Length: 258
Image (cartoon, rainbow, N blue to C red; front, top):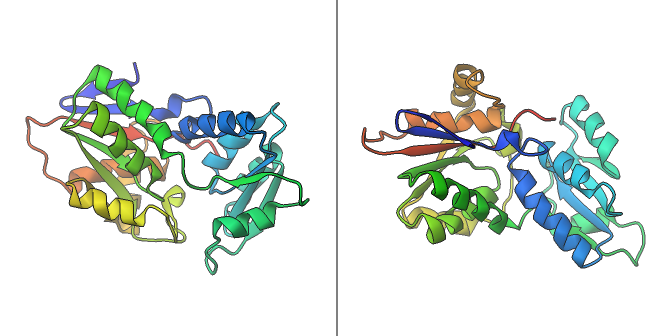
């Protein structure tokens, strides 16, 4: 079972997915939809895991994956992406926010190509995760990492259907560009208003300092297969005082795959 229990705290481990990340759920939907509509190319901004997962899933489909990455990204991650993606484009993402139309222009090679920007969207793919949790436990809280916010919003949508009494807590970073929790750094997101509205509804978002993220990772990295961006969920215990009777599910969003 994906859930392991310690007292009233549960762990839902997404590192067991085929390519080691929660993004596998979303990428599976993207590839299926792109195949159905005969899309030629998919482009996304990635810090590693999502681009790797998408490129691996696209193998054998004829769909080309273009990964746009920060020039600051670790060279080993760039090299691994180059092994699986059609093209890896390095850009100074610290100084420019790329809109979907710009990403599509960057990825385009011919006027005839059908290209989708899949950096964001498809958050409904995470509803299935809530459905799986609901089969095992009815928690008071579910804690997940927050980067752009797609996972957070998708889980809230799933909770509305399957766990209406459950609150979602998102754990993110203050640093928008180059955080130690590198998968969570994002200077711009289309989910800003949706996140604000979710907080008004009673869901919670905490943002940790770089020192707090490093301390949490150091403390919990050996508890399971955690990278900094997934270990951040354990920081909730320093931010929120859960009652002894309350149950909490922590989501390990993925292992250090790339």
